[in-house]
Every structure is written in C-alpha cells, then in structure tokens.
Amino acid sequence: MKFASTRNADYRLSFKEAVFQGLSPDGGLFYPLETPDLRGLFESFDSECSFQTVASGMIENLLGDEIPAADAQQLARRAFPFSPAIKRLNDQINILELYHGPSSAFKDFGASFLASSMEYFLKGSDHKAVILTATSGDTGSAVAKAFYDKENIDVVILYPSGRVSPLQEKQMTTLGKNIHALEVEGSFDDCQRMVKDSFTDSELDHIGLSSANSINLGRLIPQSFYYIWAESRLRGDHTTFCVPSGNFGNLTAGLYAKTWGLNVDHFIAATNSNDVVPSYLTSSIYEPKASVQTWSNAMDVGAPSNFERMQQLYSNDVEAMRKDIQGAIVNDDDTLGTMKMISDTYGYEVCPHTAVGIKAALDSGEKSVTVLSTAHAGKFTEVYEKAVGRKASLPDSLIAVKDLEKKSVLISNSSKDLKKKLLQMFS
Ligand SMILES: *Cc1c(COP(=O)(O)O)cnc(C)c1O
Image: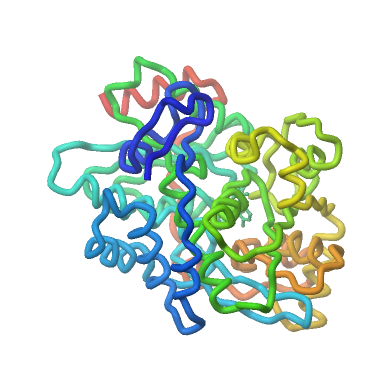
C-alpha cells in the first residue's frame, strides 16, 4: 500500500515513511492511495475472532509489503494486549467500549499501534525519533503510556493549560523518563498550530520530529480495526456507527474501513457545540472557528485536521459525503442529562463524549446504532459528579496516578517559544 499527501497526490510514500514524517512537508495529511477490496477478509472474521486476529489480518492485508505476515502477528500481539468490548444498552443501541486500554480511552488503540510500529521500524537501526504531539486531553495520556520507556524515542506533549481534566493531566505529566509534558498558556488549537509550525520549520529538521496525534497514519489505520471487529460480532444486526467526534480521526478511520468493503450503512458524526462538520453537512459551507469549551472537552476542536482527509475521500463533494455521514450536534445540557439518564435507566456509566454519541443515536430515529464509547467515565470525575450527583468508578489506570506529582514545563502559546525549547532539549 502506498500513501499520498492530501495536498499533492504525486507525493507518495510507504507506511514507514508516512509514520515517521507524520505530516507532509506541504502541510497535507497522508491518506491511503489504494482502495483494496477486503470483503473476503472481513467475512472470514466471525463472532469468536479476537481483536488481535482482526488486527493481524488487517496489518498483513494493508501493510504486508512492509510488515510480513509473521511480524504482523507479533506486532498485533505487542500493540494490543487489550481489546474492545460490546455492550447492548437497549433494543436500539449497542455500545462499543473502546476504553479498556492503558489510559482508558480509545486513543490507546492508535497510540499503542504507532509506538509498536515505530519500535518495529527502528529496531536494528541507529535512528532516534522525537514525537511532538498536541493534545486536548486523551491523546497525551494515551501517547505517554504507549511510548513510555520505548528505546530511541522521546515524546514531547503540548496540552492547553487548565483545559484538560486533572486526572488526564496526571497521566501525561507523572511518567518522566522519555516523556516530556509542556503546559501551553492557550487553547488546543494553539497547541496544534505550534506543532504544525514546528514540523514545517527547517531549522528543526535535524531533530527528527514525528507526530503522534490523530494526523499520524500510524494512529489512524488501527482505528479502523475496531469497526471491523465490531461488525464481525454484530453481523446482520446493525449498519450504523455513531462516532463522538472532535478532530475526526476516529470517524475518518471508519470511513476508510467502509471503502475497503465494511458492511456499514452510514455513520453519525456527533459533535458538541464545536459543530463545524455537522454545519458543513447542512450548509455545504466549511467554516473553521475558534474552539469553544464544553463538558466533552476532548472534542473541543474548532478546526478539525482530519476534515482534509474527508474532503479528499469524497473529492470535495458534499453530496457524496452526506450519503455516508449524518451530522448531529449535542449541547452541554443534553450531554449531562444523557449521562444522568443512562445511569438512572441502565445503571451504566458513560463519559461526556460517549453521552454526546448516545444522545445523537437516540435522536437519530435509526433502528439500530452502535455508539463508540471513547473513554471511561471515571476519567471525567468532575463532569460525572456534576451530571449524575455521585462519583463514577475509577479505572485502574487512574487509581495508580492519582497521588503522583505533576511534572510539566509552562510555555507561552508562541511557536517561537516551542522552537527554543525543542532546540534546548535535543540539540
Ligand atoms: C479524542 C477524543 C474524541 C474525539 O475523537 P476524534 O478522533 O478526535 O474525533 C472523543 N472522545 C474522547 C474521549 C476523546 O479522547
């Protein structure tokens, strides 16, 4: 499989190259150039299939020219010692729980696969990599856990000061060793801009920067695996996935799976008030904005990077995109109300992001919807308590970091400051 830049289809490269470059030099994002028909493979997965089996089959079929079959199996085992799970909420809704990994959020799937792939490609070479990533919360903790103590790799995480949950902050800032956390006086969009600026700054070339946020193909590709795994369990039962979305990596991965033959009717893209994509689907006008703060803060993205991949996939045809994606916007009151309703009615705990998805699914009028549950409720204890009136249970991953001491470096939201810092650390 070859990959290309969304801004220049002639700029082609391998998976390995795309993984280490992260972003194309022209500012574009990498996307799969080929559209293999994998229906036969998907049908070979039955409801007993482990997630590792699905992952291994997908790696072999998509990336077989760079990762041979025997290695694919081993890579799948190393990257995914955890698995998704499916819960039936009611006659209409299934929940695809994606939070059973080391940081208790779905971003573990992407981060862990990226870390294991980089480790695989760096093995036996004397290259070093520096991962530079912006996070609105969950990317940082997932990346920190995934890369912790990996050889020949350093990680620099930028996060917006005061805009991630205290526990998310702990997860990113307490590991130490090769994990460096920078607390930015600004928004997530500032963090993303600073990261983008660094990647296009030739004076930082010698450091060997790579990205690990959802723009990296190494994170995007494995996010398609759980749609395929879920479909193998739900076969015949459903055709719609509802995806709580912010930067739209999760949704884009599902769209790719559909192009490879996944049996899905369409997707619901559920956002909070940061609604530029649902608005685009309605008005045909794309207007990125500054992000606004909501209770589902990992989705507070005003200018989603992956929209560029979505545009590429549908050749800028909003009509075509509308056939596959239905937009839904859920406000903060309904988010909290849904968390409470789910607790009262089903005795089940959901995080605010998952609540956005469930509310969108309930309102969709669809007969059967599978909602991606993107994080453990216990990662958002403050919001949970506000909504439900009692504390959510804590996942093991959080119990461990609760009382550790935060170690981060405060910096301004200017790209110049970040550059100075990077040169200090790695020159
Ligand atoms: C990142 C994140 C999202 C949004 O995912 P995207 O791929 O950026 O659209 C939703 N929920 C949680 C908990 C997240 O961490």
